[in-house]
Image 1: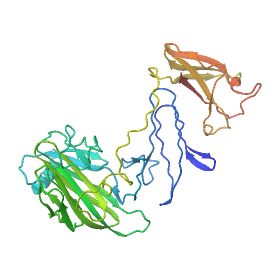
Image 2: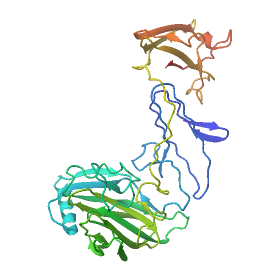
Image 3: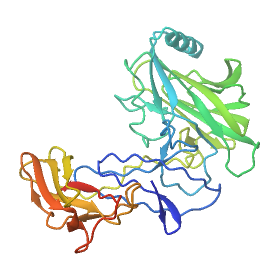
Length: 399
């Protein structure tokens, strides 16, 4: 729900189920700096808190897998290029000798058509063999270890990969329709290619000298082709794109040993890798950093087994006497809590404020269920009565 918090409409999700999943829509001005604050509470059992965001309105439908965690951004410009949604990764078996990028494209297309390929999605175009370290073609230095479990799916030798997705190109300066010069770096073990659908690269370069990086006709577009069989593909291509959205496609093949396929990009022209300028293609519209491992929380005691839902509640409307039964277990004490700030009819008070029912701060649990009784007048000032149509809300918490 939305709650007025000192003049700011605040997204509030006061769930006590361990399954909070709330979405809020807000409009912010590009280029502005904003302060934010979040609060999270934990009663018992496991705990976590993740704040994610995505461009667009997903309040009613939920995220479409294009969301990304709110994260620290390194000093530098915002990304001018990012995935609109997770890239699609397709793997297929292959038994052809290298060099064979043209054959790899055909095999991938045929495997997909015959439904014999294996597919997955990824929020970042950095793929390493799950069973072993990537070969010397990997420039990333292991910063994204574990992001490439989709490659390979199946055999670790003699396979090929196709990656396709859609990117947004926008330097986020508020001026639409600008032409941006970009360099893409293709790093792989073994050979690989990359193209922007409907656009042409203008130049290519090789950093390692282990093979020949060239402009090649890929589906009618001039793309980067690096038919290396050394496990050390480091190829760069320069292209100029008008701000907008573009589809891309890349292929990779592996003979034997380690394997990997990565596509990085940088604003400007480069013929060698620059760790400051280059970032991987990903769903993050911000500087790429090593994966966030999270903030460790204080270790909590083991939670009691089973739930403690309220299973029945009866009320004598004439006397105010009630009986409340909840699921429980022996060896665990429970507290019964109620809301304050009652209001006539309508939804629960906002924000919900919970107080312990007098005398019910430590109820020993019985096997199966526990029943406790009381009177609604216990929740009010002496002699007070609930206004007609008011609501009281109870919950039970394991201690």
